Amino acid sequence: MGVTTCTLADFTSPVAPARLFQAFCIDNHNFLPKVVPHFVKSMELVEGESTAVGCVKQINFPDEAPFKYVKNRVDEIDASKFYLKYTSIAGDVFPDIVESAVYENKYEPSGAGTHYTMVAHYHLKGDSVMKEGEVESAKEGILKMFKAVEEHLIANPQVYA
Image 1 (cartoon, rainbow, N blue to C red):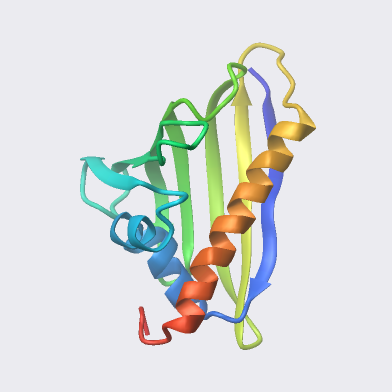
Image 2 (cartoon, rainbow, N blue to C red):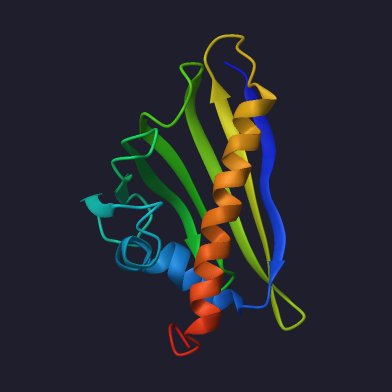
């Protein structure tokens, strides 16, 4: 089994890291379905406590999305450093060649805002190779959802203030 590592997101935001981390990592099960229902229909806790290592959350996508769901397990979380590492362990979001995917998310203070990075480690079946188009599609979706959340937080400065 090979591993393909790639950066899916690397950009800055005027929103503070604590607010982005709260929206995307801590309160995502409440926040995302309300703010970006065109990306996240609902989220449910499958196992464990909401933000504890080992918890599993299922993200359900809207009916018009090309995928139905993904289950993510929290592997590491450090709210003081705005860091989250999780593994996608089930779902229909990956091509058949992907066994699992591990994501590392960092929300680092930068000037008056945040430098956000997301690195993916795709664990591939056999000697499979990830196609560039599949990675680009993931990057586009992440950027669109991030920008929608960012716009909401800018327009509503009291949220997670």
